[in-house]
Image 1 (tube, helix red, strand yellow):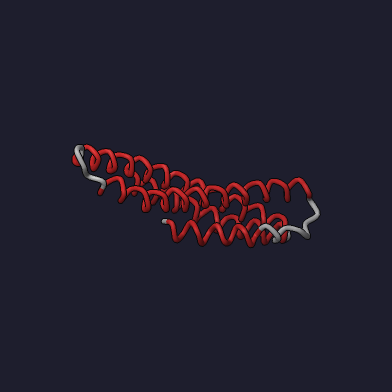
Image 2 (cartoon, rainbow, N blue to C red):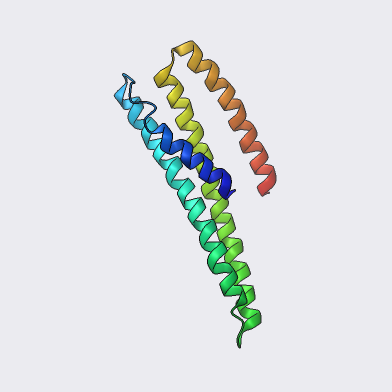
Length: 136
């Protein structure tokens, strides 16, 4: 999940310049807001997963007097953080799709934008359906 989040974050960073030539400034501002949100949630996903990888092992292996409780606390914390990481990744995907929808309306004519948005909406539907099946 972290690899996909970093890939999408890189796409978002590169896409910040993509709508500079548009005429509708309001649509461009909304596009930049969704792209920034996608990039931000991607960075949250990467940071959360990295911190869990670094500090989770340390907490689990500390041992000492309360070795069993230390391990249980580390597992409970990592489980909670994995859910948070998954939610951030899903929000990143959703914002990335919304920014892709908006980019089509900024750069192309209405027929092309509508066609591409229908395809993207189909993929978004499958993402949501499969994500719901995985999470539940």
